[in-house]
Length: 176
Length: 191
Image (cartoon, rainbow over all chains, first blue to last red; front, side):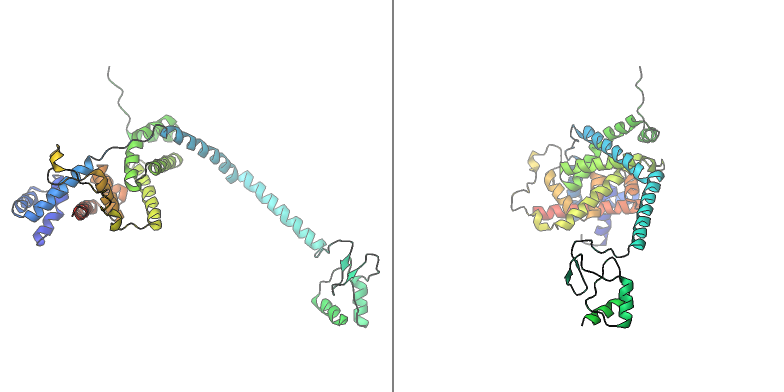
């Protein structure tokens, strides 16, 4: 493109090709193309490209296109049935009820038995010393009583819980 | 005996919306080849193109009630297919960036048609379809789409304007620029 007129002319090529330019502008393009070899060459090339594009071979969908699509639609419909169930209000209510029931059950379990000791034949005290099942132990009440009056040695907890950090610290310091 | 006039696309989709599945099949038969041609120009792979067109019809099937007769059915389905194809194209381009070096013709893939053998009057400059497609593929995405819609699918400027949701003036100027770019690319390849 040599000058602004060439730029303007090139911008008109699409509509020139489509015969959609006003007669005035079309005449201007005609005149320019007749005198400008550069623009004329560009236009000829462009026309060749467009014509080739129009002649590109047409492709056809494969013969099993419809049957494949049909089977995908059937799969889709089956999924939709499950999705409908999943999203239906009754299934949602059932899901919420189960979830609520589980939460309540877990809550009750925690309230009744906050820290369940492992019920094994041999249990360990806080110092990691193993004790035999028939070894006499003190209950939490006894520990509380004894720790209040005198230092505690090798205290063992069985069938009881310690829910106070102070208590456990006392027990550890008592061992030392 | 006069033949029963064909229903318009818009009548068929209305029938389908009212539960007539045969109307959907009729639409599939009308559009599958056109859409495969359209999508193939983006993806250059027949299997992927068919798969994408199937996705398009599945979307139509699932969202049949989303169609309103304010637009032509053809522009609606082309919009769906075009969006899917361009999305796939972007995914691919993230995986591999094409450069002009990919279009090198040292490997003898570039074979301009011999003008002497051209019987259709395209004497000045003709290109083999494969080279044209390579050149289209090398265009920036907006130009690529517009060339495919206008010069391969031969859709009207109005339809393209609706499909791409851009003003008619922009469509025309973009078609012009895309054609010039395409011609530049082909000239570059031929030198």
